[in-house]
Length: 614
Image 1 (cartoon, rainbow, N blue to C red):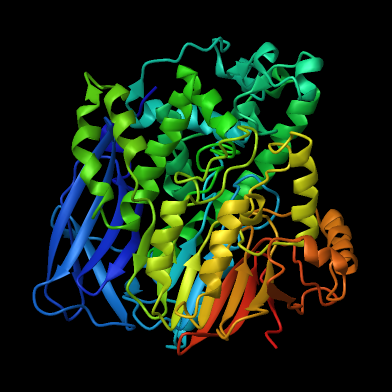
Image 2: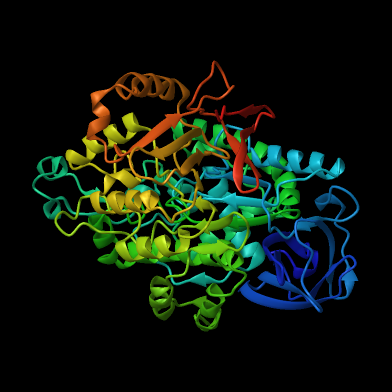
């Protein structure tokens, strides 16, 4: 039963500081009723422009743009700000480190927070809480603090949803009156309780007869699931589910409206009941820490980029995967629902609606009689090619879209696609040249762990790229060669700092060309996950194998695509000097005059570890 509108809190989430530039600051809100928002910056006369997007009878997404009436905003300086709702100034004590929230318009970057992979029901601690504490301490001490939070993929896990989370989603939808789309033609059970942990059995599959005769699945007569996540039992399906999921991922207040843990677990099998209990414990901890996450994002410019789990696991991994999705109305609808939800809650704020906002008119036309009909808008959003973006800072920030401009194999549709096609790589080359220093955000590491990439290559050669997520730059000959050629150019930056995630462990590598006159240095800084971890025992084994098989003197190095580049591994002070760290953490990248000064991990447990950069 939906609650009366008057009983709902007005603001569910926000302000979240998104893009902050000298001439414009974008704030993001989730509210429950039409409201007129205005913002003010202490000591600066500003104008406010509001964009409101209705997503339900009691759900609105609002973007508030603040522009200075004269000149520009002060740069690299903490600016206090306030927000008024319908003429009433809001108290934001819970979102501030002092009297009001503050933000920084970055120009000369001295500190950047970066991470990826935030899974609400993973048992590890949410390291965004550690980032909030770091920012609080800096604000209290009036010290120079990080001015950017870069989240490079898997901010949500649409393909790996906890049972209690799916319950909460379905309770929140009627409470907020979230507009629904027409049900898909899937043979799902009638009740949500009957669907829990079983949705994967009803999602579309490719019949075994259509599979390649070179695959094991053909000879064992096993249908191939379109959605390849091994944890797809509660995979999100409808657009309204994606919308409610985003609200619950970023709003502590939204959780006070639902009661997903009051559930008769006797309706589940014993393994699923135990899983529900474990997910409940992790989610309760996640909910308790959401206020800290909201405070963090109210005090720092927060920018994002998608990876696969924001939509679904293995999204666009191979041409065959893309073909299977395109040939199924239901599968294509689920993927597009995820992409539209990403655009709304992440993409629009990344460029402050500059390019992404051009889609709003057609999106709003998709709502007919309070039902979503996306048949036309699907074409528009799939044609949209401006997911990537840059920041005019020093060093320049370049955020890559490695999902929608793939370099597909024309010979074998089961081969992994390159993470960027030729045209996108040429565009990247143009962006990189003639800069002294660049901060490059690539969701997947450009320079990964060789032994893990070798294992992925073995699975790929056996026709099973989806099993081990062959999502590395070196998996595609053309993309790998072009990228290395770009890095070897004499006019590319002397200092390139690559920020990556995806892999659920963290490391620091430095790279230099073996040949040529360009004495540049490339840093590969990988931080993952924010709330996720790689199996620690397995990673310990893989680290030892990598050390033995790919030592400096090892002949195996000659068989790698990056043999022209010298890759050095930097150890951390975590554990016993590990260079691969599996512990939920967000990274702190400290810079001095555009060069890397310090690379540290802020662990979810509160511990801080650093990598030796020498």
